Image (cartoon, rainbow, N blue to C red; front, side, top):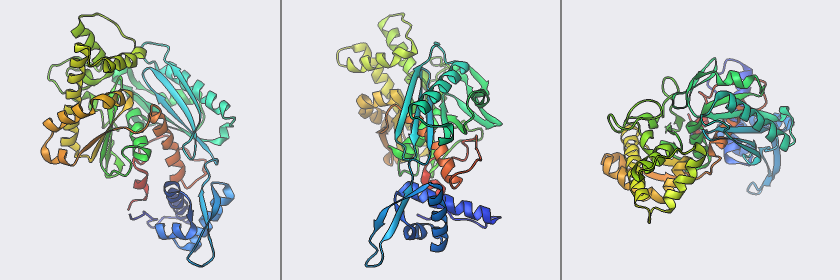
Length: 424
């Protein structure tokens, strides 16, 4: 795989930054390497590599981790990214809870805090308060100073407009152009990157999970809402306004059920958690209001009693069909190699219904794109959105070549697949 090197940078500083970034990405992705291996992989001279590695060792970004044999010559020293050099925070703002996790540079969880929404409908002020509380908690639990934190990544349930600060458009939850980054910066001064939660889930599965090593993939997040992260040629596809991937609001039934967004017949109105539970109550002849916090329990109960509860069986069969049709549409539109079914609801459904979902997709997709498609469950757990959010400041740190006081508040240039940064 060809690595992208400097293309006539304007200044010596640009060249130095590019070489540092290239070496850091190589070490982060491949682990401990010798200077000779770094030079061979990046096309940079050994003298330049030695200078770059020396600087990064002096700063503590890299550490020496032993040596390897060199075919009879002197042993070659190995270096790797120091996992203790700095820490990042990933935040998952869900519609029922807020998860805040602190990671080292090896992406190991060092502290975690979860809080449940206090309102029936997610409120921006409540979300800001919970995120602030969570950040304070994990930093204190890990006994760190603010200067130890390289940055915060936040996944939110809505479209994110990266203009002058991140603005969130959450039509389904009543967030109308909420200046969320501005609200957060009234409480948190750390470097911050905000993105859509489905996209951060996609980053996590692409870096560490079921979409790793795949050039073209769609990672679906199923929960109360439904969205996707679309990876095309190893890069995250965003569209003109960074709103690509709103799969849940594609129309699957003309004049069908009303969706939370106000439209009729959206896919989310058939495969979202609230829609599934509502359909069960409708067929069972019940009028029951289920809180968002109870949706997961009710879905699990339906899955567990599928064999003995005819209504649950019917609703789940319908759900598998609609989900399969939705995946067939993804196959026909984007021709991915793999569709990853994730999110808490996606994992629950996938554990039981994946064969039915695959069958429905196969019946409704064109033969050629479907013949090259894998449909798999997500590999990462319930903290995948937070983990993916934490990769945003990590990618920024690596791409900037290590320590800098520059802060980037947009996620637009963050890679979907870390290999994309190194790809020519």
